[in-house]
Image (cartoon, rainbow, N blue to C red; front, side, top):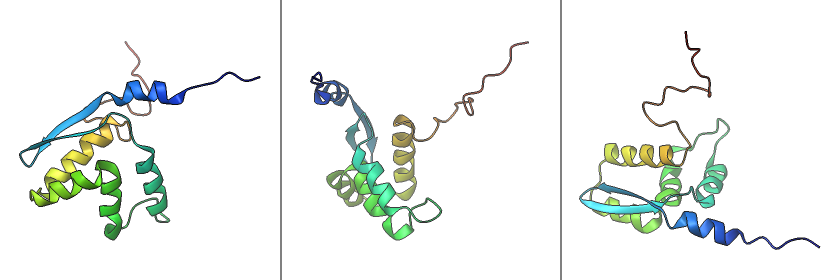
Length: 113
């Protein structure tokens, strides 16, 4: 007989952590773990080159930061540059893209001399 595994318990501990950021004069929170919905939405919206068409960016952004947060940011007239900075921050924190200033490329370390 197999042992019972409670995945919710381990995930709940990680979900207590939040990514907090301020933009357009308001502090927002995002989950500390990349939501599966984001990845699945990106896969659904990906074109043949693996990118997302411009007319579908809103749907992907909504999956990433949530409908309420996305709409609130738009109501607060967040600039595209601010939104790009938020996205970069979240993607770095989620480990999707390397953090700015990370010199490690491909996990290779420089040989000490």
